[in-house]
Amino acid sequence: MDSSMLKLENLDSLFPKEFTPEQMAKAKTIFLKKLAETAHRHYGGKIQTVPKAPVPGFNWFNVWYTPGVSKVSTDIRDNNDASFELSNRGNLVAVISDSTRVLGDGDVTPSGGLGVMEGKAFLMKYLGGVDGVALCIDSRGKDGKNDPDKIIEFVKMVQHSFGAINLEDISQPNCFKVLDVLREECDIPVWHDDAQGTASVTLAGVINALKLAGKKMNEAKFVLFGAGASNTTIARLLITDGVNPANVIIFDSKGSLNKNRSDIEADKRFYRKWELCESTNPGCLNTMEEAMKGADVLISLSTPGPDTIKPEWIRVMAEKSIVFTCANPVPEIYPYAAKEAGAFIVATGRGDFPNQVNNSIGFPGILKGALMVRAKKITDNMAIAAAHSLADYAEKRGINPENIVPTMDEANVFPYEAADVAMQAIKDGVARHIITRDEAYEWAKKDINYSRDLVKSMYDNGFIGAPPAEMIEEALQFAIKQV
Image 1 (cartoon, rainbow, N blue to C red):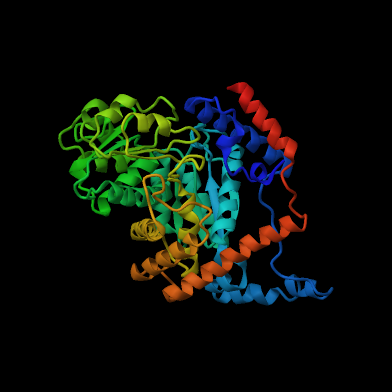
Image 2: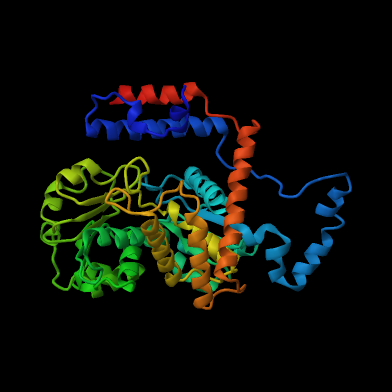
């Protein structure tokens, strides 16, 4: 097996040349899912705990544990903030989920979310130099329904062991209450990556896409398809950053959000959606056909496709239209089909297509920035600062319609982003620890390089084995046969 196949550098080259674009897209999806299943089984997951201190001799056990460690306990007792320096708390994030809205698969039971939560911890460490712990919890009450108050109580109980909390894959409307309550009642940052993370990276993509299309943020017309945690937060950040709410139309499964949606107004759990009903779509347009006429930007985070977004909707958009179809694991329309329908720029949530607009380039840097200054919360301004940081970084190294945001393999984007987030935290008055931007950048870069070098060293020395060639070949042949 050559190195390019081992590295999975060019997935298209692995499949028969006679595959149509639709067959190629389907085959890649099947291949990646099959390989993920077998690779996770082969390695037994993808995260482990490794000591960060040495044991040069026997008595170091008495330093790292009893009796010496007693002094650490009493120091923290007398000053709880000392826990950020005397333990790993200052660089440790809990990835917490009740697994009720995992990718496009919905409720997968509490333990069903472990693959995704370990994945978040994996990316935190490798991309952001941050340690993460996956915690999948059962939020069901005695009536069998998922109870947001159980998640809130759990997070408040465990917050003293972590520097930040990353909420993940919690279904709406519970996710709104969980985040809003915990942001105010916890003394550490509580971040909902499906909402704030996706919104931040989407905003970054929109900023650069509009630049390439020669359009202005405050004049562009937006259609958002889907009104879950991601798109409602995207709408909020877009509007906060200069989009005219009158130029925004949002759709949920029952139609457009507008001031006549009494069903949303009556259900107080959906207060975030009702806020958007009041501020957007003043003309109360009710159909996608109406809304898409002359629209500049479509952002879809809805039911996985490939037939969720119709080509005929894209055909009636404005010239140089921008289409973000970011459902996982399959976008609402494949990029080739959106391009054929007239889209100028197309983005998805997947890395095997151009323009991956995915929170994976957001949360590692954002959380690192918040942790370095010991922020008490992550404000919307910090999420917006991260978006502009990502857009700025990409623009400086060059953007084009097939490359509007940084990718995960651009290692230097993460300390750059972390430093900008840290500075915004200080500006917003939520930082406990004041540092300069240069100090933040160098700190983050050092920790990220350490994480990457550690993984490389373990791989080079055989502590992490290479993926078996037959495992990759079996997944490939399985996908080809399925198509």
